[in-house]
Length: 217
Image (tube, rainbow, N blue to C red; front, side):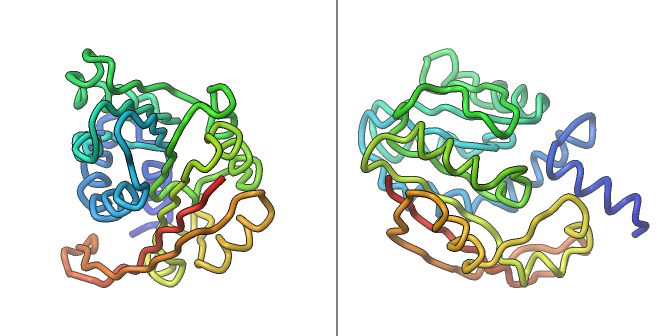
């Protein structure tokens, strides 16, 4: 692939748009579903929890989240207008029942009051955080006391093998994420790395190591 094509893939992964964006949203939901479910399961969700997700993509996984407990409220924040629209369409029943709420944001400032959420999670977005420490402090601010935040990401060693990650991506190992967290008041309560088989762009199966870190306020 040419550099421009790789750069275009990186841009779509960061901020899906146009016709290709819908395709990218579907592909991301499919390839990330195990990581997303792992993150949701590690949140330790209870009934009536208010849950925030940063960077939900097309949010094809929200139905799975609602299966975790009764009377949940889900709030999704997204930088991509296209993914915001897709998520609302895919989850229109939850939206009309006032169970799911989707909003756009700038990726830096979380547009909610202090201590608004019981649980917060994000999957495969950390590579694109513009100011990681500031965003973590924002997440801390909107999380309730004793609330949990789950960050799930693919390991740097795996991501390095993908040619498009040289553009727009900041890659992370577990140690690098833990060092970032140490700059905030968050407590790390649990770290787990798993390996899964994923299809490469050429259709071959390859091993992907991904990690979920559970934090507590």
